[in-house]
Length: 330
Image (spheres, helix red, strand yellow):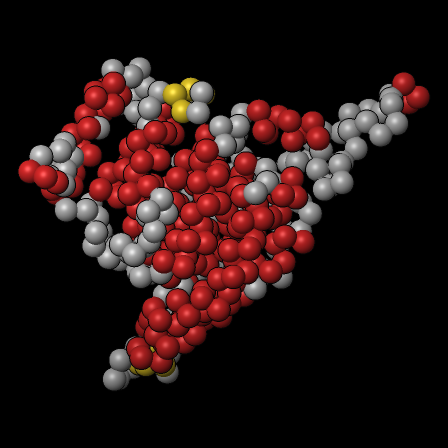
């Protein structure tokens, strides 16, 4: 196996009170400040975004989640536009009295400052009682990691807060604090983004996430998009951070085994959603690129017996997917 660092309530309408006929405590918020009737509706059929973005429209919390202490939570700035008057161009590459090098240095410092401000949210996440607020905080974290964690300084800043980020995401993925599917989905995407920034040869990161993410994928009662996000995150963590030094059962090969199982029509006695099956096959394809072609096409060939490679063994499953009525799976 090759080292895997590759480039490759809108508030609810107020209804008239019905005086004494209304039961005491009805429609009151629960201990977490959330309406239990809303919880039931959201948990019944979560429609989470397939491609997560900070303002991509979550089914639970949206971009207007209040975080006034972080001005960038509402997108009130633009890194690439300093509102300088380009008509003031001077000599030696100066614009508004600032050289290109100085502007680049200032922009890098600003990105690092915004990254540090967002990462400071991580230790406070488990103490926040509202799931919708926690999801909003994950959105800020995701944006910061994907847009501001650039270069060595960005990676080091993330590493300095990695334990806090890991603890917060694990808290949500374990379903603690009444974590809703939207929050769990967002936590998976944050971990996925972090794995890219942390980079290759980080078996410690893989080991810290293996168990948690596999449990989410195996939990048939979880929302499909949450399980899909957890599987994508697991595959990305192994692809970017893992090496061939991981123990058997904790390595990339074991994740491919999981993908093959989840890619079938039934898994753990339950029907598998076509969306989850498609995700499993995508992840399998990604991880297969970390092995030599012989392992995929022809097997190991021990004792002069050319065993079938994993890719050939997967052909019957792929054929059944082509017969599916779901266009996404096909």
